[in-house]
Image (cartoon, rainbow, N blue to C red):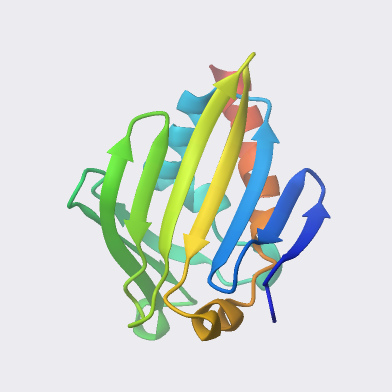
Length: 163
């Protein structure tokens, strides 16, 4: 799928291909930045929303060492023997504001940047993936982030209700 200079909106999520190597997803949440950051950096919470339910492949595990130079590893699948693992390294961590990490499962993995900008009790999430090449971006497929962010929105509502 060619992501270059394209944009689509699903629910409150906007997905834009801003160049032949970059994809940007934005969405505003009715929650404070600290809750979004917590949902992105706490393994037990991350496991509740990251895997798109429509795919039907459960997340088996999630390990995170959220600090500059720390790493993450998430595994998806029906069992450990056939699990697909995704991993990388955090290269920037600013609590409640910004995360940057590598995606190292492939030689041409993207660098992902997520920012959380809070204003008047709402938070603008900007998710940016910069790929090594156009081919790597085209191979990504895209299209799953709106569902993931819907799942994140539901989790945030439950966290706010329990806060």
